[in-house]
Length: 257
Image (tube, rainbow, N blue to C red; front, side, top):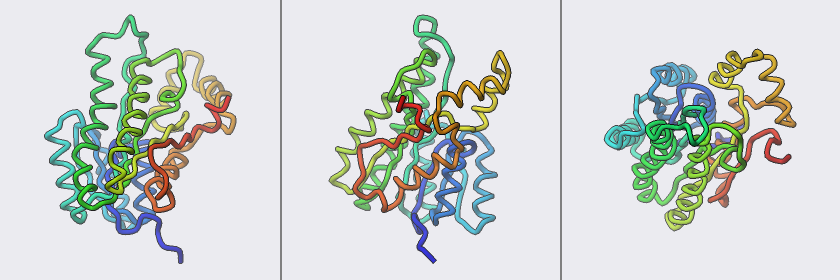
């Protein structure tokens, strides 16, 4: 039997209660990692329970990523509970924010998206990096988006945060390479998560029309959460040991057009 790809490693997945974050937590656990799930949603406990039920190790911590004290304490608790180290950090948690153009967005609305998507990623990295620096190893996977690479006619605050995350990824990859730490980004296209399907349900011309429109934009069709989770798994594993400061675009061909 082949060895599990992240056996005996300790991972933290933010936004791990639902969608791509949940799929990532389950996939890492399936390949041998002990997983700490950070989320503001109580659904994270069910994900941890599922992992434990399958014979894995997991815990759920309810964490507001915009609060440094909670982030610092949560990372320390996860490391202590799961083995004293952190090998993998998946910065997945994000919010879309309001769908307004720049001239209509309130400063508070703009700040809220940046606080979760950029500040949250920064705080998680800030307090995880000392563990990885001491170990001389680690893999950080940051979630950008196809809209960290190309523009669109909606959600300007969200898209701005995803561009910021990409630049954070490249800078941290250079700064922490001497410690054996790799930092990479993933850029998902439209993926059939709970939030995506909720958006489809509220589309003015109906769910089927929404799905048809989105499929047309993705030559390979829409993705499943596990498709993105598999990209994260590659970046977390030794298979990507010479990969840092770069991006995996998992978008079904969206940005190839």
